[in-house]
Image: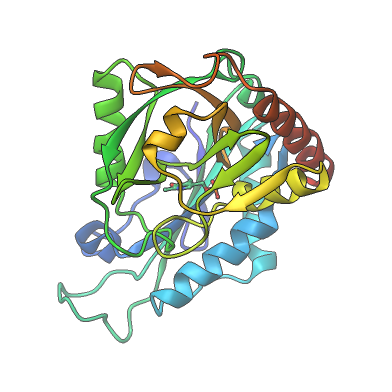
Length: 284
Ligand code: PMP
Protein backbone atom coordinates (compact mmCIF):
# COMPACT_ATOMS: atom_id res chain seq x y z
CA UNK A 1 0.00 0.00 0.00
CA UNK A 2 1.32 3.43 -0.90
CA UNK A 3 1.91 5.67 2.10
CA UNK A 4 0.97 9.28 2.42
CA UNK A 5 4.10 11.35 2.96
CA UNK A 6 4.45 14.98 4.02
CA UNK A 7 6.77 17.12 1.88
CA UNK A 8 7.11 20.87 2.25
CA UNK A 9 3.52 21.60 3.24
CA UNK A 10 1.72 18.93 1.20
CA UNK A 11 0.43 15.42 1.92
CA UNK A 12 1.29 13.35 -1.17
CA UNK A 13 1.44 9.68 -2.19
CA UNK A 14 4.97 8.37 -1.62
CA UNK A 15 5.54 7.93 -5.37
CA UNK A 16 5.09 11.67 -5.79
CA UNK A 17 7.18 12.71 -2.78
CA UNK A 18 10.35 14.30 -4.15
CA UNK A 19 13.06 16.78 -3.18
CA UNK A 20 15.62 18.59 -5.31
CA UNK A 21 18.96 17.01 -6.32
CA UNK A 22 20.45 20.31 -5.10
CA UNK A 23 19.12 19.76 -1.61
CA UNK A 24 21.91 20.19 0.94
CA UNK A 25 20.67 17.17 2.82
CA UNK A 26 21.63 15.12 -0.25
CA UNK A 27 24.87 16.99 -1.05
CA UNK A 28 26.27 17.73 2.45
CA UNK A 29 24.20 15.67 4.92
CA UNK A 30 23.18 19.18 6.00
CA UNK A 31 20.06 18.10 7.81
CA UNK A 32 18.66 16.92 11.11
CA UNK A 33 16.06 14.33 12.01
CA UNK A 34 13.86 12.86 14.71
CA UNK A 35 12.13 9.51 15.08
CA UNK A 36 9.03 9.34 17.25
CA UNK A 37 7.46 6.03 18.20
CA UNK A 38 3.77 5.33 17.81
CA UNK A 39 2.06 2.85 20.11
CA UNK A 40 -1.67 2.20 19.86
CA UNK A 41 -1.94 5.11 17.40
CA UNK A 42 -0.41 7.58 19.87
CA UNK A 43 2.91 9.43 19.87
CA UNK A 44 5.46 8.59 22.57
CA UNK A 45 7.27 11.61 24.08
CA UNK A 46 6.47 13.95 21.17
CA UNK A 47 7.44 16.93 23.29
CA UNK A 48 10.95 15.64 23.94
CA UNK A 49 11.56 15.12 20.24
CA UNK A 50 10.21 18.57 19.33
CA UNK A 51 12.50 20.22 21.90
CA UNK A 52 15.60 18.31 20.72
CA UNK A 53 14.75 19.13 17.08
CA UNK A 54 14.73 22.82 17.95
CA UNK A 55 18.11 22.46 19.65
CA UNK A 56 19.67 20.59 16.67
CA UNK A 57 18.39 23.28 14.29
CA UNK A 58 19.73 26.09 16.49
CA UNK A 59 23.17 24.47 16.72
CA UNK A 60 23.32 24.48 12.89
CA UNK A 61 21.74 27.95 12.46
CA UNK A 62 18.95 26.36 10.48
CA UNK A 63 15.40 27.66 10.28
CA UNK A 64 12.53 25.63 11.65
CA UNK A 65 9.79 25.72 9.00
CA UNK A 66 7.08 24.69 11.47
CA UNK A 67 5.80 25.52 14.92
CA UNK A 68 5.54 22.80 17.56
CA UNK A 69 1.75 22.74 17.19
CA UNK A 70 1.95 22.38 13.41
CA UNK A 71 4.49 19.61 13.83
CA UNK A 72 2.21 17.73 16.21
CA UNK A 73 -0.68 18.09 13.77
CA UNK A 74 1.45 16.74 10.87
CA UNK A 75 2.53 13.77 13.00
CA UNK A 76 -1.09 13.03 13.92
CA UNK A 77 -2.31 13.41 10.35
CA UNK A 78 0.29 10.95 9.09
CA UNK A 79 -0.52 8.42 11.80
CA UNK A 80 -4.20 8.67 10.88
CA UNK A 81 -3.85 8.78 7.09
CA UNK A 82 -1.50 5.78 7.12
CA UNK A 83 -3.52 3.92 9.71
CA UNK A 84 -0.52 3.40 11.98
CA UNK A 85 -1.22 1.46 15.13
CA UNK A 86 2.37 0.64 16.12
CA UNK A 87 5.27 2.18 14.24
CA UNK A 88 7.38 5.28 13.77
CA UNK A 89 7.14 8.79 12.40
CA UNK A 90 10.40 9.91 10.76
CA UNK A 91 11.00 13.64 10.40
CA UNK A 92 13.83 15.30 8.51
CA UNK A 93 14.60 18.97 8.01
CA UNK A 94 17.45 20.08 5.75
CA UNK A 95 18.85 23.49 4.94
CA UNK A 96 17.15 23.18 1.54
CA UNK A 97 18.22 23.43 -2.10
CA UNK A 98 20.93 25.85 -3.18
CA UNK A 99 23.93 26.07 -5.53
CA UNK A 100 26.63 23.79 -4.22
CA UNK A 101 28.82 25.82 -1.89
CA UNK A 102 30.37 24.90 1.46
CA UNK A 103 29.14 28.16 3.00
CA UNK A 104 25.55 28.07 4.22
CA UNK A 105 23.25 29.69 1.61
CA UNK A 106 21.50 32.85 2.82
CA UNK A 107 18.08 32.45 1.25
CA UNK A 108 17.44 28.70 0.96
CA UNK A 109 14.07 27.51 2.22
CA UNK A 110 14.39 24.48 4.51
CA UNK A 111 13.11 21.17 3.22
CA UNK A 112 10.82 19.26 5.55
CA UNK A 113 9.83 15.65 5.04
CA UNK A 114 7.90 13.30 7.30
CA UNK A 115 6.90 9.71 6.67
CA UNK A 116 5.65 6.76 8.69
CA UNK A 117 6.86 3.18 9.04
CA UNK A 118 4.44 0.62 10.42
CA UNK A 119 6.04 -1.78 12.93
CA UNK A 120 3.48 -4.24 14.14
CA UNK A 121 4.20 -5.33 17.72
CA UNK A 122 6.90 -2.68 18.21
CA UNK A 123 6.73 -3.02 21.98
CA UNK A 124 6.76 -6.85 21.90
CA UNK A 125 10.09 -7.42 20.19
CA UNK A 126 11.40 -10.97 20.85
CA UNK A 127 14.82 -9.39 21.53
CA UNK A 128 13.40 -7.90 24.72
CA UNK A 129 12.96 -11.48 25.99
CA UNK A 130 16.29 -12.90 24.88
CA UNK A 131 18.51 -9.80 25.06
CA UNK A 132 20.85 -8.45 22.40
CA UNK A 133 24.43 -9.27 21.50
CA UNK A 134 26.76 -6.35 20.85
CA UNK A 135 30.31 -6.04 19.61
CA UNK A 136 32.65 -3.16 20.40
CA UNK A 137 34.04 -0.97 17.64
CA UNK A 138 36.12 2.17 17.59
CA UNK A 139 34.01 5.35 17.57
CA UNK A 140 34.99 7.07 14.35
CA UNK A 141 32.15 9.60 14.14
CA UNK A 142 32.53 13.37 14.14
CA UNK A 143 32.79 15.42 17.34
CA UNK A 144 29.25 16.87 17.54
CA UNK A 145 27.24 13.75 18.19
CA UNK A 146 24.85 15.79 20.34
CA UNK A 147 23.38 17.24 17.13
CA UNK A 148 21.03 14.75 15.54
CA UNK A 149 22.24 15.05 11.95
CA UNK A 150 21.53 12.70 9.06
CA UNK A 151 25.22 11.82 8.59
CA UNK A 152 24.72 8.23 9.69
CA UNK A 153 27.21 6.38 7.52
CA UNK A 154 29.57 5.30 10.29
CA UNK A 155 26.72 4.04 12.51
CA UNK A 156 25.44 2.22 9.45
CA UNK A 157 28.88 0.63 8.90
CA UNK A 158 28.93 -0.29 12.60
CA UNK A 159 25.59 -2.07 12.26
CA UNK A 160 27.01 -4.04 9.31
CA UNK A 161 30.12 -4.95 11.31
CA UNK A 162 27.83 -6.22 14.08
CA UNK A 163 25.77 -8.28 11.63
CA UNK A 164 28.92 -9.74 10.06
CA UNK A 165 30.01 -10.82 13.56
CA UNK A 166 26.63 -12.45 14.25
CA UNK A 167 25.66 -9.70 16.74
CA UNK A 168 22.71 -7.31 16.88
CA UNK A 169 24.50 -4.00 17.32
CA UNK A 170 27.81 -2.32 18.08
CA UNK A 171 28.89 -0.24 21.07
CA UNK A 172 31.33 2.44 20.11
CA UNK A 173 34.46 3.01 22.17
CA UNK A 174 36.61 6.14 22.35
CA UNK A 175 39.79 6.35 24.45
CA UNK A 176 38.75 3.13 26.17
CA UNK A 177 35.32 4.46 27.19
CA UNK A 178 32.00 3.40 25.70
CA UNK A 179 30.23 6.32 24.04
CA UNK A 180 26.96 4.76 22.83
CA UNK A 181 25.42 2.21 20.47
CA UNK A 182 25.04 2.83 16.72
CA UNK A 183 21.58 4.29 17.30
CA UNK A 184 21.02 4.08 21.04
CA UNK A 185 22.41 5.06 24.43
CA UNK A 186 24.37 2.48 26.43
CA UNK A 187 24.02 1.51 30.12
CA UNK A 188 25.52 -0.96 32.56
CA UNK A 189 24.45 -2.01 36.05
CA UNK A 190 27.03 -2.94 38.68
CA UNK A 191 26.18 -3.75 42.30
CA UNK A 192 22.75 -2.17 41.85
CA UNK A 193 24.11 1.11 40.43
CA UNK A 194 22.98 2.19 36.98
CA UNK A 195 25.85 3.75 35.03
CA UNK A 196 25.54 5.65 31.75
CA UNK A 197 27.75 8.17 30.04
CA UNK A 198 27.18 11.81 31.02
CA UNK A 199 25.76 14.27 28.48
CA UNK A 200 28.22 16.16 26.29
CA UNK A 201 29.19 16.48 22.63
CA UNK A 202 30.27 12.83 22.52
CA UNK A 203 26.78 11.29 22.58
CA UNK A 204 23.28 12.01 21.42
CA UNK A 205 21.09 13.30 24.22
CA UNK A 206 18.54 10.52 23.99
CA UNK A 207 14.93 11.34 24.69
CA UNK A 208 14.43 7.83 26.02
CA UNK A 209 17.58 8.21 28.14
CA UNK A 210 16.14 11.26 29.85
CA UNK A 211 12.85 9.52 30.63
CA UNK A 212 14.49 6.28 31.77
CA UNK A 213 16.89 8.07 34.15
CA UNK A 214 13.92 9.88 35.68
CA UNK A 215 12.01 6.61 36.12
CA UNK A 216 15.12 4.95 37.56
CA UNK A 217 15.46 7.64 40.22
CA UNK A 218 11.77 7.44 41.03
CA UNK A 219 12.25 3.67 41.48
CA UNK A 220 15.11 4.38 43.97
CA UNK A 221 17.74 2.99 41.60
CA UNK A 222 21.07 4.74 42.14
CA UNK A 223 22.24 6.45 38.92
CA UNK A 224 25.78 7.51 38.02
CA UNK A 225 26.21 9.60 34.86
CA UNK A 226 29.85 9.04 34.00
CA UNK A 227 32.02 7.38 31.36
CA UNK A 228 32.51 3.62 31.73
CA UNK A 229 35.15 1.46 30.08
CA UNK A 230 34.59 -1.54 27.88
CA UNK A 231 36.22 -3.67 30.60
CA UNK A 232 33.70 -2.38 33.15
CA UNK A 233 30.88 -3.25 30.78
CA UNK A 234 32.24 -6.77 30.31
CA UNK A 235 32.41 -7.15 34.08
CA UNK A 236 28.97 -5.62 34.75
CA UNK A 237 25.98 -7.45 36.22
CA UNK A 238 23.70 -6.16 33.47
CA UNK A 239 23.72 -4.02 30.36
CA UNK A 240 21.06 -2.46 28.18
CA UNK A 241 20.37 0.22 25.59
CA UNK A 242 17.63 2.78 25.14
CA UNK A 243 16.18 4.49 22.06
CA UNK A 244 12.82 5.78 20.89
CA UNK A 245 12.21 2.69 18.78
CA UNK A 246 13.63 -0.03 21.07
CA UNK A 247 12.61 1.56 24.41
CA UNK A 248 14.74 -0.33 26.97
CA UNK A 249 16.48 -3.33 25.40
CA UNK A 250 18.66 -5.72 27.41
CA UNK A 251 22.19 -6.57 26.26
CA UNK A 252 23.36 -10.03 27.31
CA UNK A 253 26.61 -10.43 25.38
CA UNK A 254 29.55 -8.14 24.60
CA UNK A 255 32.25 -9.26 22.17
CA UNK A 256 31.19 -12.88 22.55
CA UNK A 257 31.30 -12.94 26.36
CA UNK A 258 28.22 -13.00 28.63
CA UNK A 259 27.22 -9.94 30.64
CA UNK A 260 26.58 -11.11 34.20
CA UNK A 261 24.75 -14.44 34.00
CA UNK A 262 24.15 -13.94 30.29
CA UNK A 263 20.42 -13.65 30.96
CA UNK A 264 18.18 -10.58 30.72
CA UNK A 265 18.81 -8.50 33.85
CA UNK A 266 16.24 -7.51 36.45
CA UNK A 267 16.94 -3.76 36.29
CA UNK A 268 16.56 -3.72 32.49
CA UNK A 269 13.37 -5.76 32.66
CA UNK A 270 11.89 -3.48 35.32
CA UNK A 271 12.85 -0.24 33.59
CA UNK A 272 11.42 -1.46 30.29
CA UNK A 273 8.13 -2.23 31.99
CA UNK A 274 8.00 1.15 33.77
CA UNK A 275 9.07 3.06 30.65
CA UNK A 276 6.42 1.42 28.46
CA UNK A 277 3.56 1.81 30.92
CA UNK A 278 4.38 5.40 31.91
CA UNK A 279 5.06 6.52 28.32
CA UNK A 280 1.82 4.98 27.10
CA UNK A 281 -0.08 6.87 29.80
CA UNK A 282 1.51 10.15 28.67
CA UNK A 283 1.28 9.43 24.90
CA UNK A 284 -0.47 12.01 22.69
N1 PMP B 1 22.34 7.68 20.30
C1 PMP B 1 22.32 7.69 18.97
C2 PMP B 1 23.61 7.78 18.22
C3 PMP B 1 21.11 7.57 18.28
O1 PMP B 1 21.08 7.58 16.94
C4 PMP B 1 19.90 7.44 19.02
C5 PMP B 1 18.58 7.27 18.34
N2 PMP B 1 18.27 8.29 17.50
C6 PMP B 1 19.98 7.46 20.42
C7 PMP B 1 21.22 7.58 21.04
C8 PMP B 1 18.75 7.34 21.28
O2 PMP B 1 18.02 8.53 21.27
P1 PMP B 1 16.44 8.54 21.48
O3 PMP B 1 16.19 7.88 22.79
O4 PMP B 1 16.08 9.96 21.48
O5 PMP B 1 15.86 7.75 20.34
